[in-house]
Image: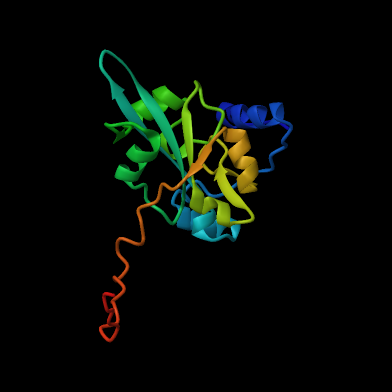
Length: 183
């Protein structure tokens, strides 16, 4: 396959080394939101993988990157990310840091094939789907993959990352008619 972009080549080559062949598809470049990508590939926005890069600053050293693979319906919960990663201080990476730490531009970050070793955490909500769609390393390039295959290709740890929906759910009320006797 003749690949038009070096980023796509890195992704395909990484998958190939693990015995996986990817079917790269191209969506309109303006389809950069999970909703637009989902519409272009006839999927649910939750099936679109967003790669969000966070960094853990280190004194007098390069920050440590953590790539979060998140369902297109979710936002990363910073406190939860800190808890599951074991990092005390985390912040979202700047565009320049994203490029320096992953080798890809912000909207083109694939789940694997980065320019250096990075820690990758995968949103457990992606596992509910039979197929998910991820960036292939260039604007408009995506591929379809099973969540367990993506986990293997990315060497990702599956964990809760999404802002908790239970925090916004109404609290259950206790039935006031229940009475207990001490005995």
